[in-house]
Image (tube, rainbow, N blue to C red; front, side, top):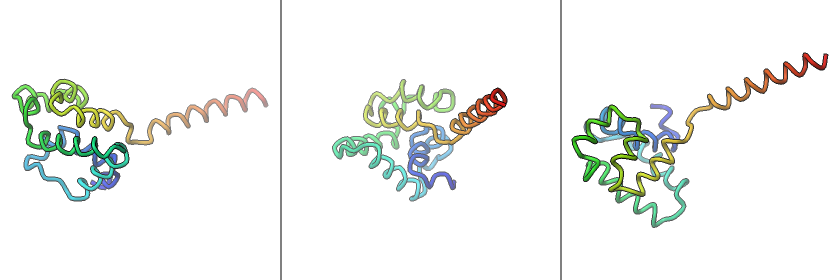
Length: 132
C-alpha cells in the first residue's frame, strides 16, 4: 500500500478493475488513495470542464452502470487486461476511458531505465576494451 502514496499509482489502482471491482468488494478505498487519484487528474488533465466530466463518469464506473455492469463485463474483469476491458466496455464513460488509457499505459517503475543503463554500461565497457 506504500506505493499508492504516489498520485499516478493511486489513479492506476482506482482505474484497474481487478483492484477496484474484484479485490475491493465494498468499493471503498483509503482516503489517501482517493487524494492521489484526484491529484493525478489535476496534474494530467488541465481542463476543468474535462476534470468535471471525468468526475461524473467516475460515478458510473463505481456503480458499474450501463455497459460497465453487463454480465460479460463482470466476467471479463478477471479475464482481460485493463486496457482491453476499457476498450470493450468503457463506451458509456468516454472521458474516464481516455484517462484510464493514459494511466494504464504509463510505466510506473524504473525497470525500463535500469535496463537502458545496463545496456549503456555494456557499450561503454566494450568501447573501453577497443580503445585500450
